[in-house]
Image (cartoon, rainbow, N blue to C red):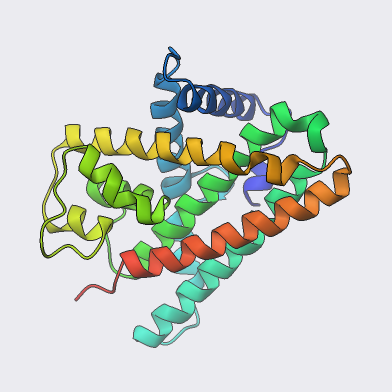
Length: 246
């Protein structure tokens, strides 16, 4: 059972998650909003559900370990497992984009926050799965923050700089700067929230592209194509930001 099964419309927790996501989207696009706490709650949910899993939705380590079964015990075997993890999440992301985009403009008020929540939970799990297979402790707070930073790609360095976190001369990327030393919890919280703002603001830039078709089926195809493409790109970033350890 996957995330689409977990996100059944009648589930009370699902309705709460969608409501929090909607509030977070509004807060990210309105500097004067008093719902900024929704962004922190959404990020906490992405980390908890995307990395640790819950109920029928398996966490990143479980998914990664399953992908590793049957592969050789070598660097090549690990890369094959990573391929499986990324391919599976591209497929799931495309399926979610299709389903949540089917209704076009009519269902946008519910479909947009539902798709945002689902996509980023899947993306968080995929990135954490890659990190786990590459030898990182995905229960460590700084690694969990590094997973979030991976979701915003090249913008991660700017987010860290604005949060007052120096990259340092030996850091090759946002993730490396977090892995070099242990950041205090307060700094990680600032970075997490900044990532949330950046993620949610980017959603508005592509919403009309995905839901701008009046024909529902066309909207579904567009949603599937875009979400599948974005998941594929995030998979590439994850491979780069979490090089093999030791």
